[in-house]
Amino acid sequence: MMTTESILAEMQACKQICIECQTTCIDTLKYCKGQGGKYIDMAMLSMTRDCAEMCMMCVNMIDDGSEFMGNACSLCAEICDRTAMACEQMSNDATMMFCAAVCRKCAESCKAMGLNSACYFRRTSLVTEDTL
Image 1 (cartoon, helix red, strand yellow):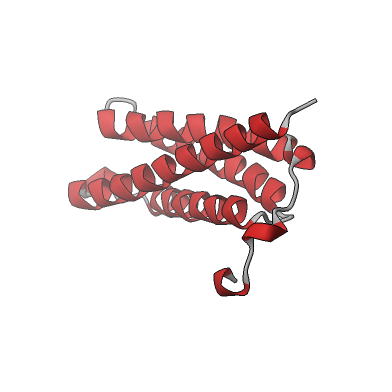
Image 2: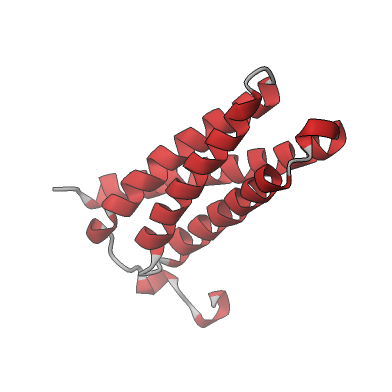
């Protein structure tokens, strides 16, 4: 059984890796646009953008104590895994491999968060009208 402290620690860790993944994906998008040529693969660029957006959504849902947080984290894990696979297609590029590694790490954390979301409790005391 998970304790409140371990749940909160897991949530904080998930938020941190989601923020790192979001930043990495945005940096990778900029890098690819700057490189041009084979780096302008619209499927990969769209996937990377989706990954960045989903990571930020997870952070927001965790912060808000959303009842859909587990679902969002599970979807984020799937998107992160697919983004990692897309980046790994350019295995000779250190920037792309770094993005893939961060996405894999985020996928692991989000997958665990999605599976353990039943242990999560809605923190209504932290949700105010101003935050909605």
